[in-house]
Length: 499
Image (cartoon, rainbow, N blue to C red; front, top):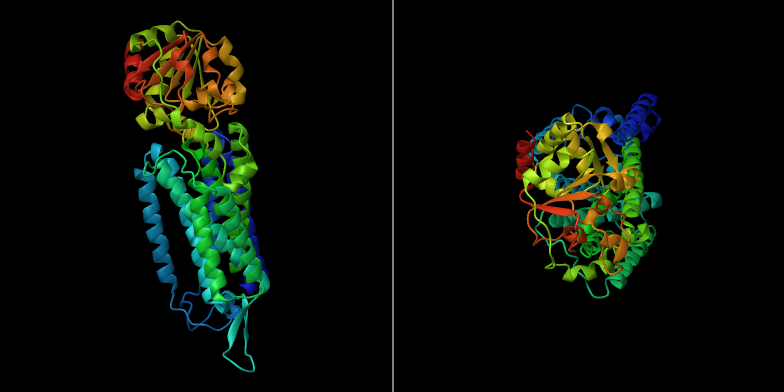
């Protein structure tokens, strides 16, 4: 481990790996370059993994003939061989490939949450292994007292790294589990309010930080395990009060946490690649969380504290759809109105994702363009269940990138648009966010679809409400026509009518 820090070839390999990760993040910032960004990320990870295996795992195994890096850490016995490590990598690769091929795009948010939990759990397991066998990790010196048994004295700096790593990792794991259960429908989307939750959260967080500091003075096992248990608990406590409307920010926030956990464990393992990767993921996730908070008019500080969405979500309890007059239309009506329009703005949402309607939606857009209609797609930053969810779905359907616009780039065009075609998007088009101070989404920037001359709103039924639990005033406006059906079936009927 110490030797890898001074080996110029290892340092160069990790530097190249880090550059690949930076290029990956840059590529993922735009749909046009996202595939190239993914390739850079995979190449960087391959370089990092191979370098770590070559420098830390001798081909004969870790026990007996210690490798150079292991020898620098101290004498110990370990039965792990390179074959077993490669077998584990192979098993993980098979699971990853199978999951990637079978997972539906609608389940991508909960899959991301599940993967975040695994990163957090890995950080916890590494921290536990380092605490139980610090000599093997090169973070301790053997102390032989005059009276008593010899023991491994962990370096104070390593105790800080270990304490923070296990704390952040445990919070990431338990928080991601709750996020997964909410996104997957195993738990209700409504927030679960605990009495005095802010006081409890602050007390637990204060206890964790106090114990991490105390751990630098005393490495007693009870301190380490108490930090671990409290961190698992606070992860649950932070995410349970969060409502479904705020889940996109939660996913982004947990992504940041997983990065910082990996970085902390990189210091424990003396692994430059982990430090670089974790710092990049943590910082980019934090920046994305900040952007998402601005898109939802949330406080970034309250996101970190885990209380965001809690107070406002309480107002959502009575958000059932109300009995008001509304107009119903058919696929033929929608096809006629859009074919006569100069410009149509399509607003996709989670309902489109559930129905897997992105391909037929692109087909509808192509037919409208054949008839001389300008077609654009409007994407809200928090449409769907995770950042970029709608962009990925449209890219999957080969929708041209130059037709896809973010909220701030297209919102001013609705007033000059003939038809706004909303398919499965509710909360992100709800004008209550601009007018109703009692609404749980008040202050969140929304797409101004109600300003279009005609709004075609695809929805399964009038009985349901959005993920935030509030009714949408757009449904009942004079310029709105409700198209009640499964999103995919409705668009298929519209395409037939356009023919």
